[in-house]
Length: 155
Image (cartoon, rainbow, N blue to C red; front, side, top):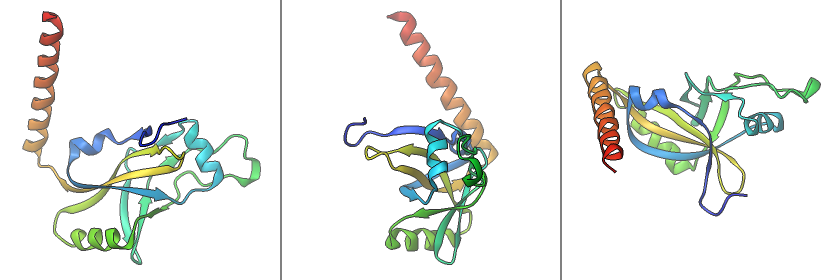
């Protein structure tokens, strides 16, 4: 059992941090069926090309693959269906207004279980990186890795 405030990360979208700058992050609930939750608990989830979009004032999660639960029989779910994200109205309106600006999008960054064992999605209001920004990100990561390596060699 998780302590209060702890989370258990199930899936991480590593590609998103390489492709986008994160401006704001929000934690959203997800409308799931029982077999989807059981499949997520087993770690059978992939969010490599996932993104979010607005439809009728609601935020939806697209292209998240949750594998079918093997013990479900006929009552299984469709693996790549769109899933509704649950945010407060104020946050939804703020996000929708920001999306009208050029170059901004909403990207899911990770899926996790909170301390109450509910599945949550962290979504980020993002701006796409240019190719030179991506190269700078790689350089910074390499520099941090080299620094950590030299520090560990010294001690």
